[in-house]
Length: 85
Image (tube, rainbow, N blue to C red; front, side):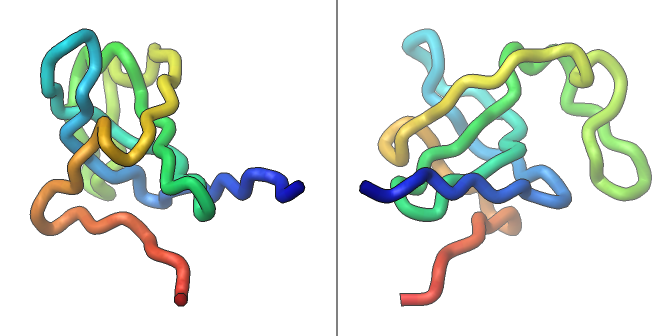
């Protein structure tokens, strides 16, 4: 039995997430290296960023939803980490 290995995404990464039967832009904070699941912030009240690219404002008040790989898409220029094969 293997334990899940969540890694923090620093800075967080924007993705398209399928939540509530629709695609939304969301912010991913963590990535699971074995299952490739993401923890995304929900609801995405605001996607405003500061000068470092970190989300600011109302986006600080959120919960997380875990998404399996079929429920999210990477956005151009915002790749997720991939473990070495």
